[in-house]
Image (cartoon, rainbow, N blue to C red; front, top):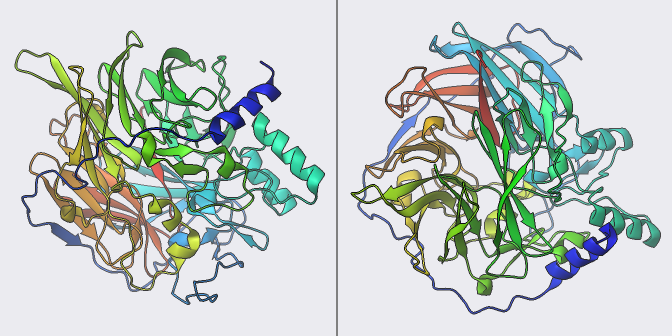
Length: 570
């Protein structure tokens, strides 16, 4: 099939209507309702911006300037809200900086390596300000820990999308909610052709960052072309990550599952709705086909931002928030952006055997909306036989409004209303006995973490295995965005919470202590945008969840998304 015909088939497939009876629904809260007292561990509020640390500035020599885009989305009354804006939602204007960080507290001497955080950090081009959190051009942040000291840095990832925008002063590729402006009908047709070929899709790798088994560090987004290799020491953009296989595809899961030996990913099939499961060995650029899951609902695959694996299985989620070509083609975004909500199409969880590629379970579950799966593991009976798969995620109670709530105007205009979409630790139980239905309940009372739950990490030694603890962003209400860090205890069904007034913390990334036996023996690191405009790397004790230290940047940093850890010996 020619590329043009394939593209037309894609459009036709995604434009069809769903025709399916509603699935069986379950209670959105469920779970253990026994309430335990949460333990908010408030850090001292900062009242003064930290003094500039002695720094080796690469270029230019001034501190980075954080600015706000000049275009504003008005409030409902047509005027700006006038609410004060946190530095988390402001663009950083200097491409790079590096310097020694001022320390408050004492870092553990065993903490020896580099913490990397990826995320959108530049939301305006010239006089034009982006609409959505996910549109921003990628800013990579580094904090290197050694001998109780910390050196910080940031640098823009030099994607083709970023370089073109910088050169031309306008959006040149299709971002999450932004499209290049067309001057006439012929240029519109040209843009449609480039969309179908994939050439106009962004390579702005502003979502994840992972260390591959061979030591390469890869920044990722949901477009396959947005896989970019970076140098973890200098933050330099090294090259595109070129896949050498023939699996094709334009998009994939933004969150592969990676360890020292392998890399698992899902590739949505937009022509014949389904998902290709692929595996790549460490040191290779070749994804190998493992198996395929056909969607049970329609008219397109459900969005698959992340997915979990167990020791022997890959779990493939199919939620009713599905890709939509009509929305992708629009010049102006809808509240669901490139997706549509098809409740009538059903919600499903599929389980594939890693070794054979065979589907061992495909069950219908209650409707759900999730960005991020936390972990999955195999439930076994007394004789050691696997009876079910348990899969946990940050679940938003099947509420799609979370997407539109992440418009920058909404984030910047907070005036005290409690508008954050409720979320919970959603626990799926997927039976392997041939049952047609699975279960979805809350793993603990959502009030334990303020009914906010996203941006999660666990001890990497427990990925795919039974585990007890998860680290995530929670909420202290009223709020419009997760504003706490939370340690979830899935056995005791309790949470410990860190909170600082007015601060916006990012994903707490767990780093285990070398040689540790206990699952929570280590630290959780989070970049925090403070109320006073400063920014710092917060280090929390993984067991007590109390602050150990903070490493202060001499400027505030925009909000970021996901992290990884590069040990010095790797």
